[in-house]
Each structure stands twice: as C-alpha cells, then as structure tokens.
Image (tube, rainbow over all chains, first blue to last red; front, side, top):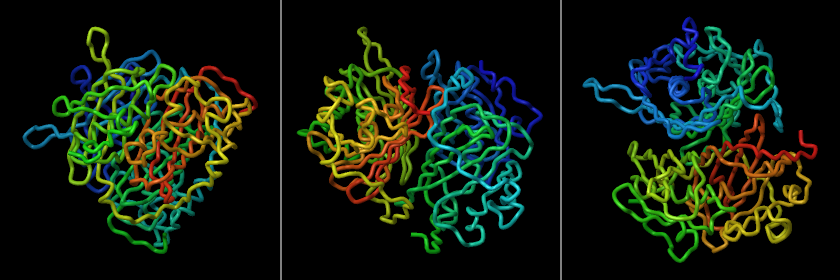
Length: 288
Length: 288
C-alpha cells in the first residue's frame, strides 16, 4: 500500500477532489469535481492525478515514474470508477494499467481514459544528478500575468482557472491580445490556489495546466489531447514550480507539446510530451 | 484491414523478420529473429515494429500516430504471439492495446512488452506544416563513422549492427575512444542494410537503433528501456534518415532519451522519448 494514496490531506482542495475510495481490490470510486472543468470537460491533468492516485494505492510502489494516458471520450463532472491491473510487480519498478470509466444513464460504463504506467519509489533513488541543462530564465512571478490581468486564457466561468495559479511570462502572452509570437512557447509559474506543496501526484496535474501552445502559434479553439506521457523524475522541493511548454512541430493537423517542470531547487522534476489535435479554427497572423 | 500489414515486401529483411500471421481475430503469431538481437536480447525497436504491424492489421486505421511501449521482461529470439485489443474505434483515430508474449518451456505465456497506441491514416492529413524548427546540420554520410570504422558501438557479434546502417557524426563518437563529450548527444544517418525505403513501421525501429546517449555522458553498460513513446508525424520521403538523440536529464539512476527523425525532404517525421535506467557502471571522465 502506497503512502501517497493513504495520506491525502483531506482539507486541501486538490487532495479532496482527487481522492479515491477502494471499492474492491484494484477498483476505486472517484467523483470528478466540476471545479476542475474547463467549459463542460474535465481537465486532463486532473483526471491523471485521480488515476495516478488509484495506481499509487494498487501497485507495490508509491510514485509515478512514467505515466501514459490516452484520452478516449470527454469526461464530465460526476461519479467515475478507476479499474487497475498490476501488469508486473518488480523489486524497484512495477508496471500498471488503469482505466477511468463514467456511467451512462442506464449504468453502462464508458471508458474515458486508459493509462499505462511504471511506478517506483522516488525517495530510494540516488541524489546523483548529471543533468546537462539548466532551468531557463523566467521573470519573477510578480512581473508575470495571470487570468486576472487581462483577457482570460480560459473562459472566465471555468472552475479550473480558480483552482490553479498560473502566472505567465509576458513574452508568451501576446496571443491574449491578438499578437501571438509564432514560436509555440508558453511559460510561467505554477502553484495551487488552495496552497499545497507540489508532490508527484500534483505534478501530473501541472503538466497539463497551461494554455495551449497553439495559441502562441496563432491558432484558437479546442486542442484535444490524444496522448500524454509524463515522466516524474524527482520529488519536487517545496515552493512554486516553473513550467516551460514548447511546440516544435505543428503539421498535418497535429502538434506535440513538451512541458518541462522545474522546482524551487532547480531540479527538472517532470518532463511531459503530448500529442494533440490542432485547433480547427486557424487564425494565423503571420505565423509560418 | 490496413495496407501496411497486408503488403509486406517479403523479399526484404525487415519486412520478412517483422511479419505477423493472423491466428485468430486480433491474435498474431510472430517469430523474433536473432538477426535483430544485441547480445542475447532482441532490440526494443524491432519488437515495436512487430507489435506495430499487428496493430496496423487489427485496427481500422493503418498508421501508428503515437505508440507507447513498456518493456517488461527481456525478449529472446524465437516464437512470439501478439494479442491485440481495439480500445476505441473512431472516424479518424483508433486506440489499440497489444501485448507481445513468448513461451516458457511448458507453454506458459510470458509478457514481454505492453503497448498502448493510437492509429490513424497519415495520407489523409493535410500538408499544412507550421513547424518552428529546422533540421540540425549533420556532416555528409561519407564523413560519418560506422561500426566498421573503429571500436564497435555494439559487440561485433550482434546481428543488429549488420542489419542497420548507422553512420555517426564524429563529434558524437568520442566515447568510442574513451573521450565522451559529456553532452549526452548522439546523431547520425540511418538506413536499413537490406535496402528499403522508410515507412511508419520502420520508423518504430529507427528511434531505438542508435547507441545510448549514456555513452556520450561517460557511462558504459546496458541501458534498459522502461518506456518508449514514439509519435509518427508524417510518412517519410524516400532516402536516408537523420536521427538526433539527446539526453538532458540523467539523475537518480534514470535518464530520458529524446530522438528526432528527419527525412530527406526535411520533415520531422518521428519524435520519440524513452525513460531508461542509467547503466550501473559509472565511468565518468569529467562529465558533471
């Protein structure tokens, strides 16, 4: 049994809304909170945190090392069930699979997300760091822009924007006033609105919490995720996180989004990549 | 039924050795050729091409768009079976899962690889390219180094090195003579020894065909892949491929390897990332 799933701080918004209840071995009930929805769909990173918590309990190791999610159908606020399978239990790594289902009016289960993951114990890893990169620079948070500072990154009635504190580097917010840079970059500071230090499960939310890089490429509209893979490389130190999201290849109606997450101790704590459909509405001011 | 699986050119080495035979709906027999082994283990990219071919036949769309593989136990040359599941069939994308098993002496199936993937039809995508990056420069192939030019990248008795033609940029081969750059970069040209133009299935091999970047970081030894995700973004143009593999984060005994594959028409045709265990033998000449 994994510590992360056993000790949610139930008085915190994130922990409360991602909690899971054991129904039978390997099967967990959950409730998708409308607080984490963008328009009518529940945020993909929030879903991943719920599935991640269920796997943390079901597998013999507590921490997600690599988690791949395929988004099958849009999730809605309301009841859900996570069904897990232990694919392989190893001494240092375990492989698990999970599916999150919701219910049709007649009770039929509809699969929303399928996840394949490897879990280990971050605290048992050595402190040996040979990282060849350094964190990119970011203006101080007080010089960055939040949703309260201008045109909303997300629709103002989205619960999601009230639960995360995302402060964007002004160099990457031109799209909000009709002047996207065309570079495909969005970067800024991340923390939770109901204060809570980051941990491996909240990192699964963090990697999918920023406005789409497609906005900075001059495209507007919905950017549905096909697949999202996240590597959690280190338990994050307390404090705000810096997130750098980039797209290098928007082609044929699809794009990748790479997110790097750095903690306050300058460790690269999470690396994610997703494949997403490009928005259908192409508003292209000069971007190649 | 997908064209890729139906029309292998059986007189080509790659197609012959990655062929699958339908046993019953969704289940395919295969034979892992020792020709694609490195020492006693079968190459992970070769396995992925076999599983990818089975999914191409089983799913309603022919081409891998995103494929995630978790490597569970080492694969050996010999018989195998691929069991597929259609998770979701969509108009433009289908989600599939597959497992490759081999057999214990008593016939028990042992799972080697589990795969979660989304398939579509590359030829139906628009030609619209907004890529913000250009292919990095690489010396001409005749100025690059193959296994015949010096200390072997892989043991000389490995079939694998005779089936692929990998020509490395001399700037990234210092490790072969005891002088790794410490940058974590390996780059070069790729083609198949038995000539065959690249296609989406052979790209699944290409992304895992280069020497580990750990060598360039001053580490030697086996670098087992935990998880490998590949995005196939475009049907590659005929001609040799350029492959750029980089590691930015080697820490706590794990590293990521990112591979970008460019075709002869300067399209970024594949992007992969894997999480691997760092080699246990640390021979670190000056690398941080």
